[in-house]
Length: 291
Image (cartoon, rainbow, N blue to C red; front, side, top):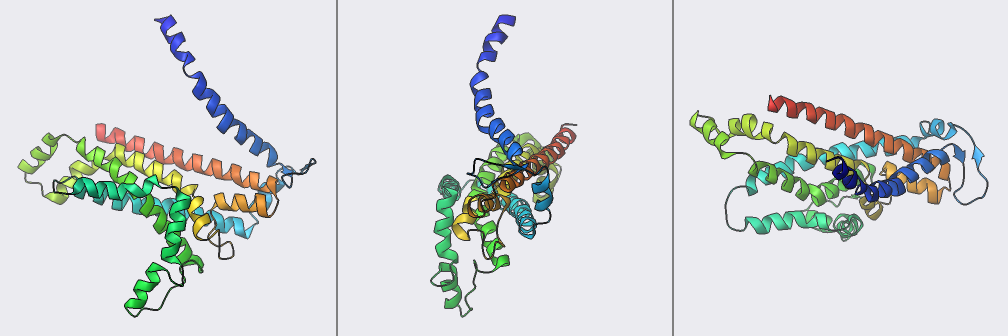
C-alpha cells in the first residue's frame, strides 16, 4: 500500500510544476518588483520599499478602479445568481424546445470576452447602436451608454452578466436535478406550496451549487479585463477601469512597472481573501444543511 501511494504522488509533479511556473513564480516576481521604481524596460531599478503601496492608496484613479472592481464582482455575481437560478428552475420543467433554449443561453460563455465586448459595442454605441435605435423608434432620446461613467459601468456589468449567466444556469440545473424527488413528494403531501418548496427544500439543498456558482462568478467579475478593454478601454477618463485594466494602463501607458506590480499584488491578495471568506461562509451553510 505504501509503495502504491509513492507511485501515485509522482503524478502530482506536472501539476505542481505548472503551478510553480505560471502562478508562484510570476507572483513572487511581482512582489519583488513592487518594491522598486521601474519603467518596465530599463536595466536599473530604484528600490523604494513600500512607496508604491503608499502611493496606491493616495491615487484617486486606483480608488476608482478598486470601487469599480467590487461593483463588477459583486454586481455581476448577484444578477448572475438570480437570473441563472430562475432560468434553471424554468428549464428544469419539461416542455418542447427546452434543450435548444439551454444551448442558446449557454452559448455566449463559449465566446472570448474580448470578442463579446466588441460585438456588444455595436449595441451600446451612441450613434447607430442597436439599443439607441430601438429607443429612438419609441421616441426616447439616445443615451451615451459608454461615454458616461455610470452608464459605462452598468453596460459592462450587463455584458458580463449576459455572457456568463449560462454557467450559473448549468450549475443550478445540475443541482436541482440532483435533489431526490422523495423530498419534494413528502413536502407536497404535507401541503407545502411552490414557494415553501423552494424556500425550505430546494434552496437549502442547492447550497453546494450556490457555493460553486458564486465563487466562480465572483472571481471572474473581480478580475474582469477583456470586456472593459473592448467596450470602453477604461474610459471615460479612466472612470470605468477595473484593477486589471488599471494595471495594464500603469505598466504600458504610464511605464510604471513597479507601481503596476504593487496594484497586481494587492488585487491578488484581495481576491484571495474574498474567495476564502465566501468559501468559509458556504462551508458553514453546507454543514448546517447536513445537520
